[in-house]
Image (cartoon, rainbow, N blue to C red):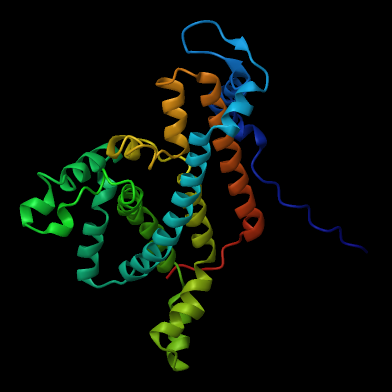
Length: 296
């Protein structure tokens, strides 16, 4: 007598996702479709849109200001990840300890998460003011220079402030990931004579694989959306030294009154963001993610 194989487990019905899909389509897909259509229009935001064909795309992709914004966006994305990833990882591992002093430091590290980007930008503008900021108040000439008004320094100041704002969030991700690593792994490594450095590279890092993937995806895609902080801190200046693509999109649309070209930049940002997310998921095997950790 043959026994029939068990029926495959049935997941939740697709109808359970219908409300979320409907909201996503209404507030995300439909507006994105409108932006795509508008990218082929000539519109100043007041009159009637006029069909312009591929003219907006040609002017945008050959505009030196937009090309410079693309270059700056790549720099911000790469440098932000190179700075935030290791710092967040190390802070997260440190804060995962159970000691009381680490808990106190964790609270201090998380303070930037309580402030809005605009408030942080205003605070740093005041602190870095060459006449009335922190440098003149302390009498330190190095801190008294014009950090934001110098084209050679402004972008690096922006990158530092971005890191200061978002490192706590990613540290929180790593802290949660480390606390889910089975304690038995560290106990076995300790019995085998492994030191802290060996445990970090052979246990902690491999177990944090999916946390690193998630954090890196958020960092890289998030770098394509920085606007409010840079707008308040530098306004894209001095000159175009900090005018990245999101800021270029806003200035093109609402100061140059060229909504068609601004829509082109918006489409580019969406396509690049989706492409990066899909590429990271494909390369990392995120679609095959399975839990590899048991709670401690």
